[in-house]
Amino acid sequence: MELKELREKAMKLPLSPGVYLMKNKNDEIIYIGKAKALKNRVSQYFGSDKNHPEKVRRMVQNVDHFDYILCGSEFEALVLECSLIKQHKPKYNILLKDDKGYCYIRISRDEWRKISMVMQKADDGAEYLGPYMSAWNAQNAVEEAQKIFQLPSCQKVFPRDLGKGRPCLNYYIKQCSAPCSGKITLPQYRENVNAAIDFLKKGDSDSIRLMTRKMNAAAENLDFELAAKLRDRIDAVKKITQKQKVVAASIPEQDVIALMTEGEDACFAVLRFANGRLFDKEDFLVREFGQDTDLSAARAEFLMQYYAIRKNIPPVITLDAVPEDEELILSRLGELRGKRVRFHYPQRGEQFQILTMCRQNAAEKLAQSHGHYGHELSALDELAGLLGLEKPPVWIESYDISNLMGSENVAGMVVFKNGRPYKSNYRRFRIKGFAGQDDYASMHEVLTRRFEEYEKNKESGEGFGQLPDLILLDGGKGQVSAVRPVLEKFGLKIPLFGMVKDSKHRTRAVTDEGCEISITSRRQAFTLLSTLQDEVHRFAIGYHRKARSKRAFSTSLTEIDGIGQERAKALLSYFKTIKRIKEAEIEELLQVRGMNRPAAEAVYQHFHQSESVEEPSS
Image (cartoon, rainbow, N blue to C red; front, side):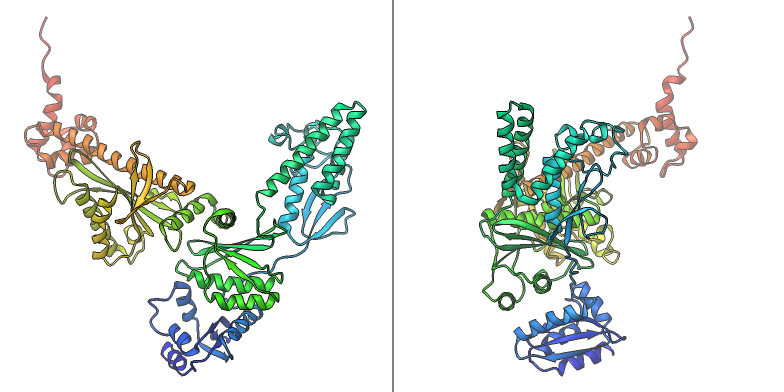
């Protein structure tokens, strides 16, 4: 069916709540949505696509026809939409895989017993603890037991690898007893394994009580070596317990959910709390999410699907932003739980710190999937919050002007992509519009030329054809005021800020034309902005020094008869250095644009005249 026909069909729909099902030529459902008024919502898909996100445009291109189901209310439509998505799993809806299965802690039965976390119970004679609903929780427990009781976490097999290697770092930081290098006997090792199993079965408090009794008995029997060993283990368990308190919350039962995006992908992270303690962590990567996706709608879709696969709904759900249809979703979650559910949007304090941790987890997962580091995404996310941006800025451009009393007036542009320098897109500008020192006019000229190049190259999307998500200028309100008209002239709505330095030339704040925003309290954003400002300053001043050096060389060449500024520049451009010009023959000099034979001979004679003077006879 043609787009025009689809729109005509959509315009005949009733202004009633309902669910619509987009289908392809094979009659497969590719997208399911709900609407308060079906006619208004569905007809939007088949009008102008200028305001559609890329993901929606791709979906519409594959729509051959659509069906719809009328509902009594928008709430009924929400419930039906969630049920149909779970049943049909359409391609263009956000789909969450329910891979939450039981897992176990496995204790091998061989001579040198090993403790590990596994997803399935096998008939192999090993001892299994569990099942556990949270793989993250089980893995944490195994790692804690290995550290406390100094059990190896490597892949070495004992007794095959006994005494065959040197101890690794874990041995020196007292997290492994190093059986690989023969540092522990088999009876001692078995004693450690048994203590670790007791810890896993009974928990930290019972384990501490048991070890304390053993420590006191050893001391009474004057076995001070054993007593000291038990004391160290007790201290290790207490340290682990203290570490767990860091992720404790004042709200006893809650889920904390955060969303991070990078390029075409996104990640939802969920931290689950029960009895005030973190007991589970989940990450959901969403591929082909789309850079221009409506984040509030995405959060709403995630919430409905997540709690369709997780029946245990807490009374409080902490979110990093408001989802679309907030009241409808709360009503549905309250109905599923049987009690009231509320959303919480913390801005400070303990809950904000936990939400920040959740966002960092999402950033780390997303970064790992793209082969870089989570702290870069976290810094961009923190910067976005600081500047009031809707999304973390993937592409940042920064500009700085450099001159010496108005001479050799140049500018540098650096690009940071995903929080890292993107040096292939760095650019240099020589100020051409005027002579003398005027940083505001220089910045205005540079940004004008930059966006003139954008107009020429925007079809390619490469180099100057890429629009930045954020522009940062080295300077204050004056520079921002000078550049703002440029963006208005080209009809661009790009966030624009200046980076302000303190008396020690360190970045202390960012500013627009209104007020300054302090960055000193935001560690990751502060580090990113400082790095960016230092980099653009380095790049601009490096170009300025190079220009001054060339000018000095050019001035020395203009002292030669017949060599003006243009020929001097051409010579330096061709030969790169004065030394190579000096070593060139006349025929080589003639290869330079604008050179003729008299000029070439004059240059040659200038550098060789001392060699042609005959030595005086003795």
